[in-house]
Structure formats: C-alpha cells, structure tokens
Image (cartoon, rainbow, N blue to C red; front, top):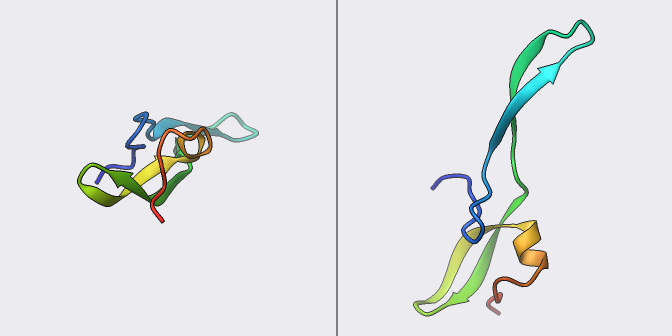
Length: 63
C-alpha cells in the first residue's frame, strides 16, 4: 500500500535539507496519515486517512 490518503490522495513530497553552508541533501515531507476503521458499503474497512480529511468529517468512523 502506498503512503497516500485514501480520500484526497495527499502523499509524500520531496525537498531538500539545507545546511548553514547551503549544502543540499534530499529529504521527504510525509503527510500525517492515520489508520482508521471507516464505514463503507462493503462493511468496515481500515484505510489510511490524512488528519485534515479526518478532522473535516469526510468519512464516517466505524464504532
């Protein structure tokens, strides 16, 4: 499973660490994903959701 939000598709972004001497090394910006049990037509499922989608109520959590 790729590290992406199942709702909005937010995933890993890439950039650089920049030192004081301006030497650049690669780094990754990872979204805050949580594994949540949600209600779906096929029953309860566990999916990865970013916290923004979880907070805005785009999914209904299972009990």
